[in-house]
Image 1 (cartoon, helix red, strand yellow):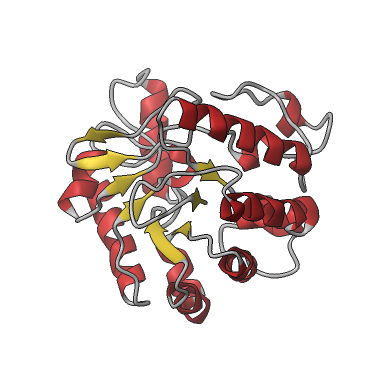
Image 2: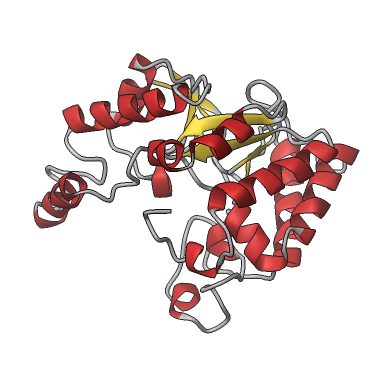
Length: 261
């Protein structure tokens, strides 16, 4: 909550409270989910994080500690900009990145979470990230994004890419409205298209089928806050029903995980 994200400004509760409702909906249809949490979240909302951790259908992964919002991060990414990428990164210097990974894992461990999966905030990683994660016992890493991305091994971890359209970047919700700056200026690996949440579900299911026909593993990125703000989870429930009914067979990369947020 201390980050004060643009989505949080539209919520009537915390993102963790929204995530609990999200996970409960998925549980009704026996759909397991992976939720990536910052270490700071575990410190600010310990009891709610413990509630998530106790749910049978929830895996909790790491998502950095401060989400790059410290003077160290800002200075180091400033160096990257000034030097044209010769030095610097969003993640901070290598020793600091190692420190932040360890601090995140410790904060989540204290809430009863065994952390083996990771996604950096905003998919930001550098040439040291996978090696540092592997050293700390992380086995699955999910920062790659793109329609042609497939599961692969890298520096001792399994890279599980987001290969269906990410919700937050493509779904109209909260500050992302037709004609808004957030919509008009965005373009990513899945293009610049923005759609209603209902259209997004169909887009995801179509892309999932395409990935499966290519004998790949389909990973869906579906944020609790984004999907609650879009239509209070109506579309999300249709998505988990499709997964549960086998209409979209999203193959697991580990521990039967099917939807990643």
